[in-house]
Length: 171
Image (cartoon, helix red, strand yellow):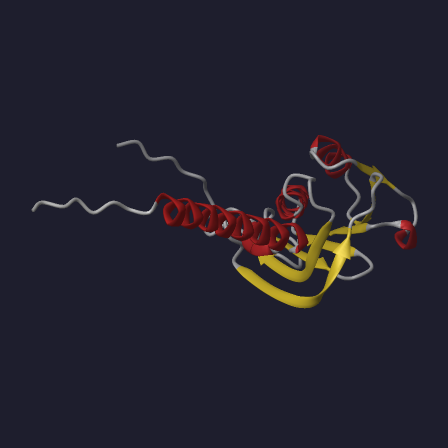
């Protein structure tokens, strides 16, 4: 009287194959979506205080970034660029530059504050001091996924420290 129900092995194998195919399709679709996406400022940690995103994109040059430093010229700013993980070289003319940096303490109430404007043809950084220049370049570097992406979304980022000091708390 006791009959045991058995599962048809062919149906089970077909379901398993269909599930694997579905997983492969989802993985391929997500990989393609991530590969074609431009880097955005929302990828930056910590998130900047102000972000305005434009519709265009900027493509970084394959070679070294050409940087022009305007306004207060500082050896320290040039040295900070050399320390940056992005390959940079300074140029003498603004028109030849991929990145134009202006250090102007009057435009920012913090030496670490900056405005990073990424336009389709050029990147502009206005900073309150050399530290602001460094942080703006770090933001740009994070947007390029540490140099692995060469296309970034055009945007304007305004950022500065929320506090005038940096603290550490141990529990």
